[in-house]
Image (cartoon, rainbow, N blue to C red; front, side, top):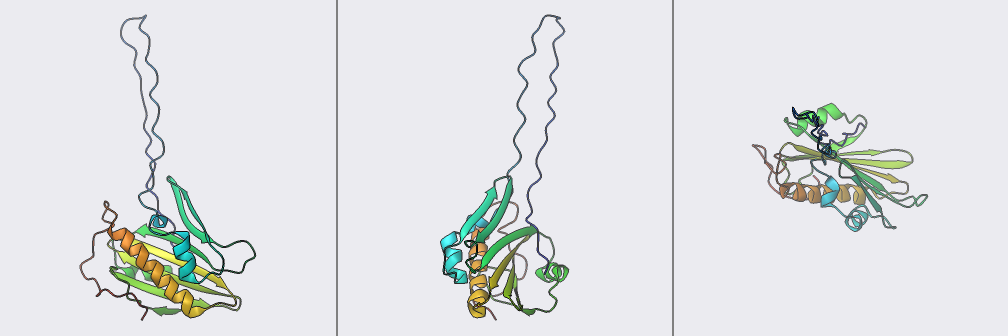
Length: 201
């Protein structure tokens, strides 16, 4: 299952040029400092917390959040090493097409695909692949031009229903946060939005 990569805003590079005056004895002022790397546009972890995600996926041990840095964000929730509990990652990208077009590019061979109803989302997909040793659940959710992808990996013995519903619950939290995040069209609806609900179909 391919995964969307976390998109970040490009860093700005400014070239500063200092020119001396015509007089030969004039001192040149201090060189201006270059700006730091531009912070990323968005981080899905801003709309989630570790306790919320731990409960959603049914982990018996608390998951730890890793949100990266402002200029190099990530959104991961991972269990203690060797605990056998689920791990969660969230990525996003901006895309001007539909979720169906975006989803077709990702691929979902040998997996069960459903269309959950997520409150506030323009569209959503849930992909479930039960392998010999672990369960993979991936949620795709669209709000305007923002496409967020949630990956849950749960080792055996796993609770498939819990993992699926938990992924939908996380999708709902991400959509709620996106709808209240101003700028760059993240909260802009697309022309046709499904009726709000929050249960998988």
